[in-house]
Length: 346
Image (cartoon, rainbow, N blue to C red; front, side, top):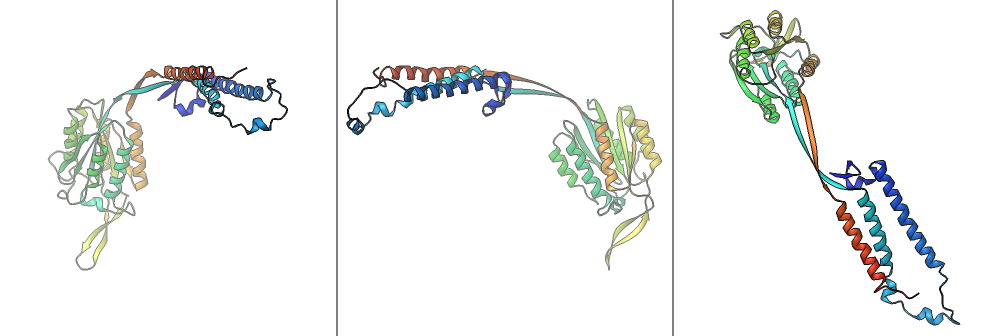
């Protein structure tokens, strides 16, 4: 980082600096242009001359090395003035240090992977596929939060513990598929598993985002008991019921005709899901399509934002002395050479 006249800018953006710096450069350029104009005009209008009866003899005389390279004196003077102008603009190189302080949120995503999630009412894909895609979008929108993933069917287990390595977490989400766990819907056990991951952490806010398309029919812990457990540890639960009302198409593999579809009713225990959210200070959502599910995750993202404080400071190193020294070198060269090697008689 380079600073000119108090502005943090790149050296090549010098003319975009503040007004004082710009004025300095304009005046410097005008001064250099005036010097060049005056010097060449004086050279053309000089009255010092020697009269010859015939100048053809003088024209045949070749120019000496001193005459051919005397233009270097003008270049040295122009360079010296240009460097002094840059030095007046006070260039500085700086290293910026940032200290980020965030009030982190710990989030456990809880995802139903039971066979009912194969329903294809979120066309053109099934519920699990759409849920995974929306979870990945949600993860990508977060910063400085620890996020984990619990999956469940008849049983539940932690697919990924709390982490800030979102790349690893996204890979774990991609690895979720049907058949990992025996079929069933153990909502209470899934919540208890997520609570167990969050209970000892010291984050300012702890939340669970639970997505399911069924009702609790397995596990040793019922959902309301698990919700009370979450409330005891100040864990908020957002619940999402996924699926269109009425019948939905469920695929099955026919041994003769291959993939077939059957219509089965969508059974979501909305009453229990609402009660879970209410007891923990969360909110219940119903997703009837992929677009609605996308809006739900965006709404939760807005409600549970991390507060980030950034304190930055810059350590500067003054660069103007280098320009002054370089300018003095060219100025000394111009003075010394004009009075020695390039000296001319009046």
